[in-house]
Length: 478
Ligand code: SF4
Image (tube, rainbow, N blue to C red; front, side, top):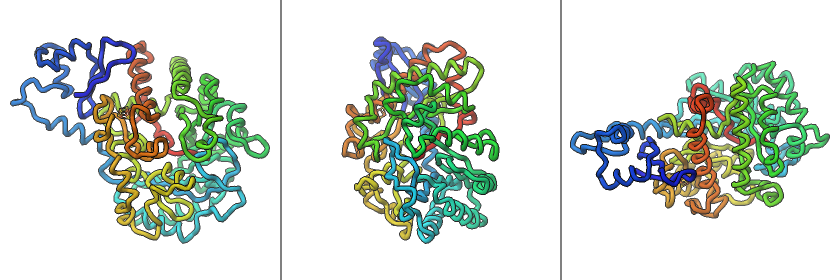
């Protein structure tokens, strides 16, 4: 049993089991549990036993139910990486200050994935054992090298005739300049499209400069074209939040509602790519982010009360951890880490990485996490020092700080993020922004659930259910 004092109520504690069952107790009740004086026949004693937080009679207790729950939570480990990111080009029209990718000018075709490397990457894809493979095309702007998207997809589909995997295709794009030929191709192969929308026009255009200052109009036109060709649910969107965005929580939420989205993903900035260089100008403290987030969440709940279903995607991930026994599989929030175990990236130059963040670090000159080249086998990648380094610090339950944390069964290890922020894959949790963010989300959502009326509580609970939740976009759109 691990515990954490509630920041909003000093008299009570959050306690959790190894498998992630939890309960909120009064402090004096926890002291009775620890002293062994709590009567197991009281309602509280029965509740604690049902959640595997205590075993009243060790001679009649088995660990089997607890182990079975741990197995359910870690189910995403069973088949290896299912998310495969193909970076078909670094080229992009935009020059966003927070870009996480080292983009290239839109005419620099030297930054395109070659045919030979694309063919090898498809060979590697099928070396992984997962029965379900999600192939996400990314950039830069992947539509600037659409012919390679087409060639890879067709090669995969052809190979899959005898492989028999469940294939899912995603394109992370600005959706600018989508044409009918591309849309017909996406319809034929049931693509899901993922785009970036930072909020209302003034904000989106300020965050995402491009020649003509028309990024917002082009994105909205792309969303509309995609929806009419592929269906209303074919496009998901996520925001990147700059300092400027933090002043507009309600406007951002209202924009998503106005454009007919049922999911919004409010993401703080990451310390990669151009965001690292421009951080002092466009970045902010996490405390400021959470002020923004609280207000945005209230607006989202108000939208739901008006009868329109809208979820916040990161809250849904945290709530699914808190309220269900299942694994959500989101690669940034897993223990063992999702880097290389849940996702693999095939970069434009044929290099492979265990995560998008590892690729971004390499683009900044730090190749610590490069697994190898697509000409090598997956077996060689897994034996690479880079993978060893990721795995050494990849289990949250074994990390200093996390090992004692009550949220650890529900949290994740992110060794590459800690390396990027703190220069060390294990990281130092008390000063880690990743940890502060996680603690902030757990505390905020537990408190909000506790203070919610029946209607708001039902909304928050519904976000936790997998069948209702759209998978949030996993990666950045340039
Ligand atoms: S990252 Fe922080 S919140 Fe998550 S398990 Fe580790 S110490 Fe707890």
